[in-house]
Image (cartoon, rainbow, N blue to C red; front, side, top):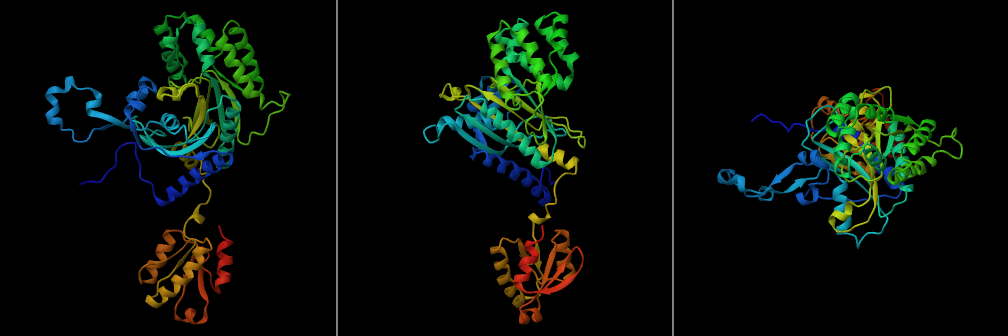
Amino acid sequence: MKPGIPKGTRDFSPLEMMKRNFIFDTIRNVYQRYGYQQIETPTMENLSTLEGKYGEEGDKLLFRILNSGINFSELKPQTSDLKHSDIAEKGLRYDLTVPFARYVVMHQNEITFPFKRFQIQPVWRADRPQKGRYREFYQCDADVIGSTSLLNEVELIQIIDEVFSALGIKTTIKINNRKLLLALAHHLNIGDNDFIEFVTLIDKIDKVGRDQVLFEITNRFKTPDTEWRNLFQVLHSSPFPHNITGKLEILKEMFANSDIGKKGIEEVEEIVQHWINNDPELISNFKSASLELDLNLARGLNYYTGTIIEVKVADTRSTFTSSICGGGRYDDLTGIFGLPNVSGVGISFGADRIYDVLEEMNAFPDLTGASTKIMFVNFGKDEAMHCLKLLKQLREAGINSELFPDQAKMKKQMGYADDKKIPFVALIGSEEMKSGEITIKNMVTGEQSKVKMDELMIVLKGTK
């Protein structure tokens, strides 16, 4: 049988795992610095938990798990009478937010609100695989639930900036508000029942272009073409700070008679004011990001109700155009599971897309220090037993070290160390065992020297 893996999935080598862990550890450290606590939820959820939460398109992308014991040859004659639940009751999780809402409801008596959690786990979507889009990929989520304060949005934007600064990626943080989109829909006489369809079309602007979206919207909603073209003068990004404040003034005039529009403007203003210290010229400390108000930004997930956030690469070293982080405010996601009126807001870093960006930019740091720092050559049984005692001391000191397991030829053992990019090799024969010294070889320079154990510790701790 020829081995293979499903499309949209990947194997990861040791070097790739070091790079991935660099991303995970960077995100995890920032989350913990802001007081977020880690949880995990199961790989599979009941379909009743997942279905209907991601819009019609999202439901199509759910991976459903066949119920145990199904015999399709017996089902064929009666498939027209079958319900979905007869075939599949469970599915692989599509994201981490809906399972988190389910978790909150089930554990509401055990957690303290507001609850700040983070989660780093894989999710699955039956999407068409392409560059930057996989069927199995990791999300790195952080959410605050049980608080309506917009300080949470401000903090999440700070987290985004801090993470990408630590990763060395320049970004553009785009923000919008679903209330503004709802007000836009009302402005165009589009009813609430058609709002999700309207949002879905707006969300396609970056993918298919404004002309195509204009055609689809005017055709679907019978809105005059000229009115939409005027609207598209508003639907573009506005950089911070002047253009954001200018755009908000236009929206205030447009939504003068819209309570929901006024509320959306108020929320955007409150968030933006945290980066304007009473002076439009003074921008607070963004380390690696720029901030934009983008009324194109819709994020098609049904559960968003307020602020929405999306992050794009703004680094000239990258050609990557997909979003690498996103999120938003949801006011009643837990209500679906029986705990109404609990507001939350969260973000999710796309670790796999971030990996691709860093790889394209050749921006990963040197991670060889995360692997073995020194390998002991195996000269035989007695020498190996002696080396095991020294290895114990090194490992207790936090130094990654290993002994070649077999008494193989020197060429093979050195080749092993070279292939793994181990910077030092220790050679201990009968002479070294008697003297208590260790011969070490620098695999980069080729230099050899004899050192005592305490000197070896200093050498190894002084290297990356």
